[in-house]
Length: 441
Ligand SMILES: Cc1ncc(COP(=O)(O)O)c(C=O)c1O
Image (cartoon, rainbow, N blue to C red; front, side, top):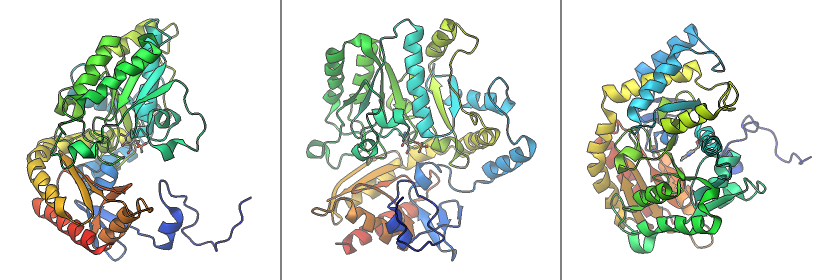
């Protein structure tokens, strides 16, 4: 039994996720409400949200259409299973999503989070190859610095050391591509960096080592978010697609962050003009209001699995809360809000202003790189000697005290404001960050 050395306070019981619990509880920051671009603390002090919550509140907070839809839905149909029973909103939402996905990716599987969408996608990829009579294709390829949530599938294909190292041998038969982050050649790039497409060729080496007949799928984030906004080099995703095509490997884009306008289009796949076989999504699907994830699957993959099934159930997979009525209502109202306000185009139109503003931080203190795409930015700081992450954490605390919510990962500031952000709010983000960086050691 661990000894209880600390006196219990009312913050003790909640074991906070991905949080330095002791540090946080010694100096807690709580928000009490949110609206539009702002959170508000207990004294109703506004905090400008430069991170759309956690990359998810793309339409801004407390949007009336979404709030009302959820309110109405809970009174009308609070819950219905999706196992062998249906409710109309689930079908309607799947149809709406499939209108936004790249052509052909029009079969939608629902789950409750990004992590579940990743594990679902990996299982679908394995089931597809088995259905084609190629059960030897079980190997999954992820990428260094990739983040695919926290399920065992996701951390296995993921490439973040700390997320993997305490959790046993993970899935067997997983390999990793090298990451594409290259400050020597690409620092201060605007949009896609020029150098690094050839890193996709490392997939050829992995294929040669294991033989194509053993490889099921490659999964990458088109833009890696959680490890600090790594934008794909020009030509890189195209090259991955070509190699996957050549060897019959499924390509999965994890778009949990990049979907729903973040990069100025519905999906990064559409923005880059590269069509994967499977897309995972979550976050912006319900504007962060009700947990929901989804997997968009090429109909050829779906058809193959259904046609090969030797039992009435074709895929032995699903969740109690798959297509939960509240999530479906929230999802439909969210997609309606995006369409009514043309928010994906708005993000695209603002992206030049965003780029100029963010790159004005190039000469700010401690900054060693600035990168951007759509309404995403990464501002990389020089780590303190022997104390990695401390500078960024201090920047986070100081920004928050000054009424600005940023996100930090390692020594990188990652920004992803709601797509309703105004130009003067972008200016304020940049001015505050510059000033904070000038003050912290
Ligand atoms: C690319 C990517 N995949 C998966 C996830 C996991 O999503 P969740 O936290 O909803 O499980 C995240 C979360 O940030 C993500 O960025």
